[in-house]
Amino acid sequence: MAVRNRNFFLVPYVLWILLFVAAPIALTLYKSFFDVDGAFTLDNYVRFFTPVYLKMTLSSFWYAFLITLFSLLIAYPAAWLLTRTKHKQLWLLLIILPTWINLLLKVYAFLGIFGTYGAVNRSLEWLGIGAQQILFTDFSFVFVSVYIFIPFMILPIFNSLEELNPSLVFAARDLGASPWTTFRRVVFPLTLDGVKAGCQAVFIPALSLFMITRLVAGNRVITLGTAIEQHFLVTQDWGMGSTIAVFLIIVMVLIMFAAGKREVRR
Image (cartoon, rainbow, N blue to C red; front, side):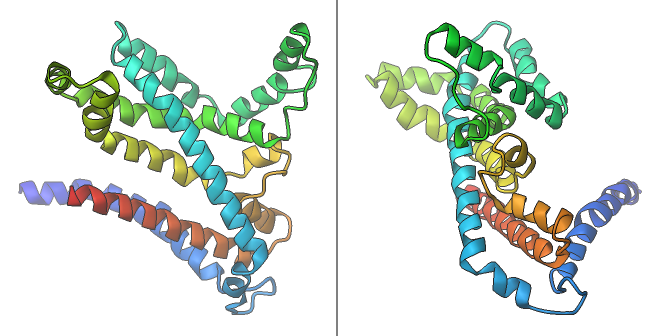
């Protein structure tokens, strides 16, 4: 009876996976084998390995790496400080709170902040530096992306630090280890699972960014996400757009599989 009840409650979950995960992926894979005229072709996959799309691929990986790196450099100290504050749950809530706001609203807010007459340029003028072109640059794209993704990096690292046994840190310090050695040899290795989870949560969606590249970077930053948007909404070449999407899905699955395999080995 218990097994039957459990299987019954699995039905909504299985239906959700089939309708909103498996079916869209299957449809995307199916559409990737057709050209603009609806004829079956393999040219989409051949075109993907041309210099134009390979350059977009390298650009996507490079910016995703930068976003993940800067998010990690900011998130790890922030998570460490959170574990040592008095009202840690309140501070954690304040960090999570921006994720409840619509992404488009946050991006438009930065258009005003980084604009010619925005708060940043007014501050630079007050300091005597003068107004600078901040919008439509690589800096603005990476900065806004890091701001959006950083809560997803902080959360798993915070949980790993919270689960860390303090006695291990005290033992390392009692044995003469310096703070840096303690962090490098004890704290960081024991929180590596949280770091990997945070990096996956940031790197994978950062590969397919398109709205931020258009609004904040002014299409100066061209990624695979931008190419997918262009093919679906502008050129109407759904086959090529689906081909790029298939490649991104494969990459995401490989990243998750590789990270999970290393965790099992440990």
